[in-house]
Image (cartoon, rainbow, N blue to C red; front, side, top):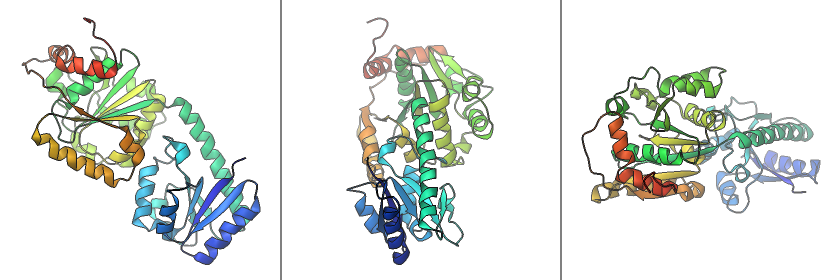
Length: 355
């Protein structure tokens, strides 16, 4: 049986070494304990072996690099189940000090107690986390992201036609996160509820997520969508935790097979949300003007040091589209059965009705 590896991260060398040894001795058939006295040693060790459980002292949580790693790998108040086997379970090793804000969502184990009691508490937390992760994995569906570093005006027409194409094979929910999406003007619709209403209901009440989504759901040419935020200034004020929680709820409980996220700005938690996606399409237009924003996006992404995310990115050059002045249903028809629709159907691997 594979041993559960527990890493003790504490700048108090005497305490950390003893606890690491005690963990190994407490149940040598089940646990192996290791100790790291500084961030640099811990970070270096991750390249060769990722521990199953990590105990973090207050001093360790004060390393900026440690806080950034937690932000990338932690969901709302649970561990990210995307690629879960490759990520550790984090615990706060609490002493007498006041807990730092970044430890707020971490399960806490009291530092100064017997090693046997520490091990029992760790294992209890770890078992609960594993059971919750397994139950969510069954329910969670696919999340696909679309983003244009140069904010191409053709990003949303592509996202909509791609949602329609994917919808021929799976049940797809389109969610527009752009600040000025233009839906009311384009499609001549008046919306009673929008994205902000759905987010509020899902995050603040014990409601059926599917019913909540359906209360604001619109359909257009087979595309199921939540109307974009009307008061788009609020999009930058929503916390990264709320965005992540909302996306996870949609994926797990909305009843859709695919959640397609059409991004605008880099909303709070942008890269963490991208990390939950199975694939992210990075859309640009031909020409020199889109090359500089694309290069900057690649540089920012590289600084995240997330190889798994970079492997999910698919770079697309959108086709040139002939513009006609249409409104309402005629506009979406133009996109669906023109160059953009053909491009999206090829990408999705489906045929048009005229093929």
